[in-house]
Image (cartoon, rainbow over the protein chains, first blue to last red):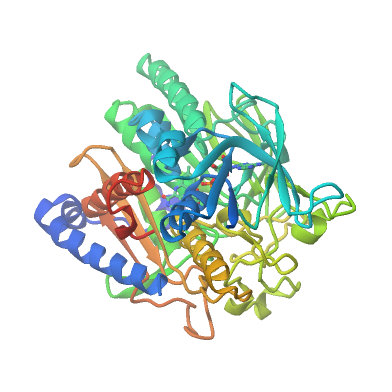
Length: 51
Length: 485
Ligand SMILES: Cc1cc2nc3c(=O)[nH]c(=O)nc-3n(C[C@H](O)[C@H](O)[C@H](O)COP(=O)(O)OP(=O)(O)OC[C@H]3O[C@@H](n4cnc5c(N)ncnc54)[C@H](O)[C@@H]3O)c2cc1C
C-alpha cells in the first residue's frame, strides 16, 4: 500500500534526506564522532540544568 | 526525628526518596507509598510496545531495594491528605489504602512532618469516549499496557503476512493530551518493526496529533541548527515521517473511538473520521484525584489542588493571555504556598499554563497540547524537593533555597528504534530550557547552543546507555548518585 508521492500531497512539501545523509546516519565511524559530540553537548546541558 | 513521606515511586518520587535516605541521618524516617510494587523505566515501554523488550526488562521490584536502603515502603495508594491533622490526630497525615495481595483494601493513616507528592498522572482515558486498552485503543503508558499492545501488534502483523492491508493510527487520543514524544517514538518504532517483519508494503501509518504543527511536542517546538539554517522541529519531524511514509493529521481532537474507527474534530471545526486496524493513542493526563481535608474535616481539596487534580506549588497561577506569559511564572521550589511542609514534583505539580499556545476550534473545543514534564525535569525536581526538605530539617529554614525551574532546566528526548547495537537508529532532540524564556533568549526563547537535533545510530547508543544507566541508578547500585538525573 505504499502511496506514490505526488505533487501537492502532504509528503511533497517535506524535506527528505539525500543518499549521502542517510549513509552518514549509519556510518559507524561518523556516528562514533557524533556520539562523542552529542554526549558532550548533553553533558553541558545537564550541568547547566543541575546548577 | 522527622518523617518524610513520599507519595509515588516513579521517576520523581524514587529520586526524591533515594536522596533523602542518602543525605539524611538514620534517625529520620523516609516512607514511600506507591500502589505498584514495581518501579518502571517508562521511556523504554515503547520498546515493550513493539515486542522488542519484555516488561521484566523495564521494571523491577521496589521492596528489596528499599529494604536494603533503609526506606520504609508501603504498597498502597494515597487517598487523602490531612495537612493540619484531624480532630483525633494532631499531626498532619495521609490516608492510604493498601494494594498488596496480603492487605488489599486495608486503610491506614501515615503521619508526616514533610510530604512530597509525586503521584504522576492519572491516565484519563475516560475523557474520550471509547479510548483506552479496556475499550477500543491501545496504550504504552504502563509496562502492562505496552505488553498488551505488543500482543495486538503481533496479531495484526500475522494477518498482514496472510495478505491483509492494515491501517495503524498512532498519536494523541484527545485535544488536550501531552506526551507527543512518546507517540512520535512509537510511530517511529512501528515503522521499524513492520519493515523488520517485511510487511511495511501492506501498512499505512497515520499519525494523529493535537499539535498545531508537527514537532510542537507541547513545548511550541524548538529551533535547531541544520544544514546552515535554523529550522523548527516541524521540518525535522515532517522529514522523518515522510521518509517513512507516515502521513499525519494535525490540530485534531479525538472525541470518540469505536472498535475500528476514530472520530475527530480539527481546529477548523470540521468533524472527520478515520478507520483503523490498530490504534495506539495517548490519553490526556490529570491529577490522580487526591482529596484534602482540614482539622475540622472540611474539604480543602481546592486549596491544595487545581481543578484537574494537580497540586498547587510556588507558580504564578494568575490567568493571563499567552503574550504575557513569562518564564518566571513557572515554579522554582515546588513548595505548596499554604502548607510549607508539602512539595509536589514531576507530573504531579500544577503548571501555571501550557507552553504551547492555547487554541480553540470554531466550536470552542480546546485543541493544544498541555505541558510535558518529562523524565529529566521530573527527576531533577524530585531531587530538588529532597534537598530543600533536608535544609528545612537540618537548619530549620522555612524558605527553600534550592530551585529547579523548568525555565532553567533542559530536556533530552531520544526516539530510538531497535534494541540491538547496530540495528537501531534514533532522532535525538535536546532543548534548553524547556519553558522558553523570551526575556533571556529574545528570538526563540531557547539557548541554541544546547538545543539541537540529530538523526543516526549515535542517538540510539545514547538511548541504550540511558536505559541501562537509569535502571542501574534506580536500583541504587554502587555510586548510583554519580549518575546525573
Ligand atoms: C510511553 C512513554 C514514554 C516516555 N518517554 C520519555 C522519554 O523518552 N524521555 C523522557 O524524558 N520522558 C519520557 N516520558 C515521560 C516520563 O515517563 C515522565 O515524565 C515521568 O515518568 C514522570 O515522572 P513522575 O514521577 O512524575 O510520574 P511517574 O513516573 O508516572 O510516577 C508516578 C508514581 O506515582 C504512583 N501513584 C499513582 N497514584 C498514586 C497514589 N494515589 N498514591 C501514591 N502513589 C501513586 C504511581 O504508581 C507511580 O509510582 C515518557 C512517558 C511515556 C508514557
